[in-house]
Every structure is written in structure tokens, then in C-alpha cells.
Length: 634
Image (cartoon, rainbow, N blue to C red; front, side):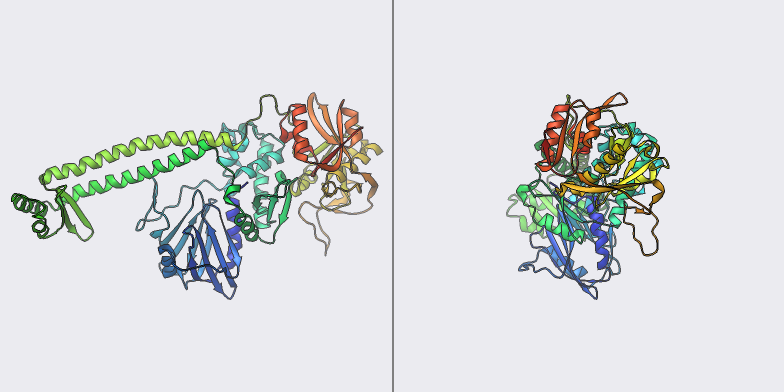
């Protein structure tokens, strides 16, 4: 279950928030010191931006009613600097989980929402930090009032990669493909898994083993993700029990078999998903991972504090020598007064010395103002040179400790990386090895009883691909007479397909359509020649993504029983699990199961077959139709 927005989610929200440009900020609320609500109003209507740090961000129509009995300081600062100003820009920093709201002001006022980890909000004037919600320090960044704001190091934008750059990343990686895509290409886990599914490869395939053709397809798939953001299909994913497990801005082939709840906007989907997400439902992390993350945060905070301490002590020593004469005179006056005996009784006398604003008799320390923004604490038992030596020695020790802490951070980061990679993708059991991979594994496929290869699309993207790349003049095309069906290509079908193969291809088209999930008993399909299949519409026609126009006579096969078989077959010397029309599987498999739409959970059936055939469950899941099953006797 997803508990935090991905970079894709942020991109989708930022796209929707462009409708807010020109609206004026009205009021800011921070009711729980973590959830920020701010209102926007103008000719474009009334809207509320909701930012739940550590969870998500979205846009709501109208004003949300929020209690405001005692606004915290950060909310009051936002009202002071931003209220009444027009929103002129909403942007995502690179492809990271960082959103920047820019308001019309001179100098520019910006509100930065960092949505990774526990999250943070930073109010900027130009590049200077007015105030962060939470002050933090790292080696490379210091999020404190008065400092210049630095964005976190960019993770990389997958949409900016050209073929050469992507090839270099994949070929030089020592990681499995899914890990390489997730960490080095900056695609989150589910999008990396979707690419593996589309390629027809296991998640544990080495990234360096991809062919040039594979890499070109990865480029195309990443491009299709960009198209998905431009033409969103917002939805919430549901598990077998109807519980919400994820929210996505567009549909992925890897989620083909899951139930979905569709929404008009991604913001409305995100609101329902994240506001219904109770703490108890959030996926619990590996305890070791939590320990290392907390350890790393503590180490980074310690390094930041040590760096600040070293800098401050160094400056104190330099300031002492810059005002040597004045400070030496003050120390000598103090020593003369204290020579009288009782330091506690002499406290007021010491504090009467010009520039001395406090004296701590218990520790023998005076606080001396040497400039408007600089105060030094001096030990009255030591001369000025000894005090300077203490400052420099303290700075040196702090720097030494910081270096040791940085080395510890590197060790923790390595351990954290190892645990993350181990957790990200579950290892394949030793007794379940992937089968040999072929080009047709990228699609739905089966070998007909006549030995012809038949391939079909898995989603809109592969529907386009199976026709554009694989429908040749000597082939035939088949399609179910229903929306949501795959484009099916019968290779070499024009010269070699018998009535049996044509019937099997039509059965295949119907069984892998929405008819299965709808639990229909039968359906109809047709086949045509390649020159009857077109993507070019006539005036007044519209061709959706993944669909084609059929011109001329269609050769129908009607009242097709929606029934398939699955079994282990041998193709070019390699064992493969094949799911296809019953007669086709019977012709090639010694043992098989006949299935139809039913009540047994698809996931449970896939697990049984995975255990039986000793191959990863992903391979079984990939060949099964979308929907639950009933196993029949032959």
C-alpha cells in the first residue's frame, strides 16, 4: 500500500494546479503543524491547496472549513508575506518530489513544499529563507532562517534522457533491471516493474543484458509515461477485497488485472486515497530500514551541528583578535574587580564594565558585546590568548568530529542502500527460475494447433506496437467484437492459417478482452487482412489510443465459448507456460488445466501454478487472462 506520493504523482498534481495561475492567496491554515491548507480565489473560482507533509498534495474546488483558534507562527508568516498576492507559477523541481509556488511580489515570494521523507515547507524571499517549518542541516544544505535556499541534489529526469544516455546507464549498471530503472533512471518501483512487464522480462534480469531493441522499447515506454501524464486516467487501485492499495495518474499494464475506481481528476483521487489512509494501513517498513533511516538522520543532524559549531568557534577566535585591544582591557578590568574576593557579590560590578552584558560567577564567564550581532563569552581565569586558543581548539575538535561523523554517514548510507535494494524486489526462490525469454513474451501469445505464432496486445501501448511493428503483409489481424480487447496478429496467417487457427485466434481475442472479467459465457470476434487495418481516420472519425479502424468485410466467428487452457509447452527447445485456446494447448502440452471465468482468485491460481511448474509467479500472472477463474475437468 502506497503511503507517499511519487514523482509521477507530483507531476500530475502540478499539471492540474496550472488552473490556479492568477488566483490570489487568501488565507493559510496549519491546524496540526504538519498539514497546510491555503485558499486561492479570483475569477477562476475558489480553490484550496492541501499539503499533507509525508503523504501528498492536491487541489480541491471551493474552500474547506478549517478551525483556526491559534494559528502557529509559520501560518502567520505565510499570511503576512503571501496573503493577497497572486500565484504566478507552480512548478516541480526537476523530476523530484519538490513543488515550488511562486507569488507575485518584488522580490519574489516562494513557498517550497518538499514532499520526500517527513516533508518540509520553506518560505523564501528571492533565494533567502524567511522561515522553514522545520530547521534542518546537512553537509550540502542548511535549511535555516536567513540562509540561502538550496534544492536537494536532483535525482535525474527520465524524460530528459536520450538513447545514448539511457544505454550508458543500463549497460554500465551492475543492478537488476528493475532496481536500475528505479534508482538510476529515477522511475519509482511500480513504473520500473511496468517496464519489465512490457518487455516480457523478469525483474531480476540484469540491466546490462538488454539488447539495443530492448533499450529502444524502454525509451518508448518512458515516452508513453509522459503521454500518460498529458492524457491522464486518474484512478485508485483496489485489491481482491476491494481495499485501496494505490493511486495512479494513468493506467499501467502491470495493474491490468486489478480493479480500479476512476476519477475525473488526479487531485480528487489523491484526496480520497490519502485521507482514507489510516496509520494502521500504511505498509510497515523493514525494522532494520527504519533503524538505519533514523540513524542516518541523527548522523546528518549531528554533522550539521558540528559544522555550525566549528564555524562559530573559528569566527569567535578571529573576532577576538580583531578586537584584541578592547577585549584585553575588559579582561584586565574584570580581573582587577574580582581580585576583591567573592565573585557572586562582585557580579554587578563586573556587569557595569562597558560592553559586558552578563557575568556567570559559577563558571567564571563574561559575555561581551563586540558588535551589533556578535557576542563573545570569555573565561575570566585566562588571558586573551588562552581564550583565543580555546576557541580555535574547540573549532578544530568540532571539525575532527564532523569528519568522523561523515565517514559514519557513508557507512550508514551503504547499509541503507543494501537494505533498500534487498527490500525493493523480493528475491526469486532458488527453486523457481525464469524460463527462456523470446520476443513474443512482450505480448500475449500462443502457438496455434497448426504451429503458427499468434500475438496480442496487453494494453493500449502494446496494441499499437503489435500492429505497427508485427502486422506484415503475409499476416492476418483478429479482434473481439467488444471494447477493451487486444489487437491480435496471426503471423504468416495469410498463406498458412487453417479454419482451426482462425477460430483459435478469435477465441484468444475474446478471452483476453473485458469479457472474461465481466464473466460472460461467450462472445464474438472477427479476422481481416492487414490492408483492412488503418490508424488514419476519415473526416468525422476518431481513433482512440491503441485502437484501429477496420475497413471492408469482416470475417466473423460467433458464439465463441470463453474458455482457455494453460500448460507447459516446448518452444524452440525451451519450456514455456502457455495460456491459449483449449485445442492449441492440447496439441502441445502433455498436461494442462482448462479454465473459464469463475470465482477462484486469479492470484491464488497463479501461485498454485508457480509452485507446480517451479517458475516465478510473475510469469504465470503474465499469461493469465484478467479476472478470476474456474478450473474445469477435461
